[in-house]
Amino acid sequence: MSIQENLSRIRERVERACLKAGRSPDEVTIVAISKTFGVAAIREAYEAGMHDIGENRVQEAEPKIAELAAQGVRPTWHMVGHLQTNKIKTALNIFDIIHSVDSLRLAEAISRHAARPFPVLLEVSVAGEASKFGFSLEEIPSAVEAMCWLPNLDVQGLMTVAPVAADPEEVRWVFRSLREVRDRLGLRHLSMGMTDDFEVAIEEGATLVRIGRAIFGER
Image (cartoon, rainbow, N blue to C red; front, side):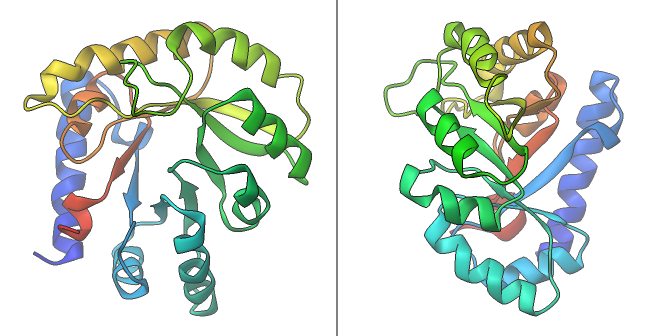
């Protein structure tokens, strides 16, 4: 399968999931996760109409973003991995949105370095896994309230990575729990759902789905 064919299949699956949930496909943005894939693959995805690209690591993304920009390829770039404070300045220069603000300390540092209100999502460890970064569900309301006072920080929503499960129905509660908190706070975005569980995430309200393997192939 080519990247274009993979994208066509993913779009069809997104549309079916939206139809099942009574939502418009226009409410869901596919973010193609290009971690470990090179410039040629990203360009192919871009030319197939994929204009939202996600990267996990600043140091890997920086040269790819620069090379693609020189070729006239300028998608919306999403930072979806753990962001270290010493990489903030670079991240603000190369990305358009950060999905993975996982502490008030990181939010404060972004606010200090940003030259404009920068779009961010707060990462939430809904299932409380020790291996995952992020706020607990209980911490989110107070974190959002604190961040509202920070200049140059635009909190647009929440993000989570669900536990690995053989059946995506097993993690539906994760997505539903995050949506309920998002709704109470009146935020816009829910970044949740990946290759193995994005349809359930869409049914539970995802507005951004992060898909790598089903678009680019196995790493």
